[in-house]
Length: 361
Image (cartoon, rainbow, N blue to C red):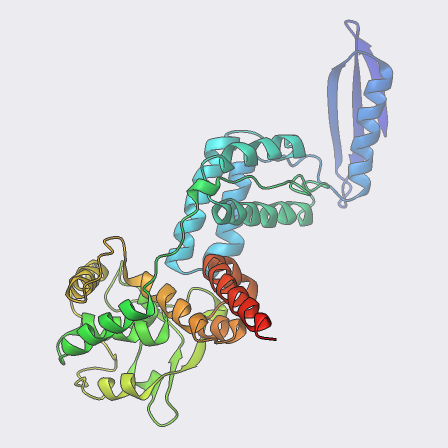
């Protein structure tokens, strides 16, 4: 029910309603120049009530975003994913400040994307957009808002901020692999981890978390089902980055034969006892091996071996679907988005090959 009154030359609208328990609620707004404007406000408010929107709830968007994350996302994420969300919480707080969720319009949100994307790569903007959209859908499900202010908003990004992933050529990869094999010894865990990354494309924490029981020598497979948190404790196991990262992959005999030379001192394949900066140590060793192999790539790091694995498989004509499953991606679009640079490069080579073959007709 709506009531209208005029005070000091301005109109005020007051809407009254009862909740499911029968409790009376009222919401009013003053300062309208005409009664028609006040009626329009009341009509919109009553429409919101009719849709089940809790018109009395209007949290600060940044607060709601953080609470949504802690309730629906945080319990299911790896430390690495939590860190990404934490960064996005800071982004939301920095831009939206104390703006309340009901006052955010599509225009306001598009301005945020425009400003945010000026200095960021496409994937970064797209990920932030994905997080905020999920949060907005949650607010709609909670009955706080009825409109999705992210709908049809166009992402803006800076192409110059895009980083093409670094990888080794086939010749460089072969040289590095030879150097690593030459340096293998039972106590040289960094060398074993580098070799494992070359042949599997697995992540650092996944390789570090491998147990002897995860290696099936008879069927030539490795089961990747957990990750070792090397930042916060030497024996802290976490789920893989995503549920789809749990996977069983085929490996070659060369790698398995090298595994057989590792002494079984514990249940872990790579029994590391050291500082939380073991990954830094492995990257230092990797750079030493690259120099021995005659490869000058100062920014090349352990995760670049995952990119190199993909580049090599693509160069050998391996199907993108098979690569996606091997990497533990949720779907092929994740793989194609991440490695679009590779795919475009090999497409150009394929196009040249197609043209050459057509000329032979």
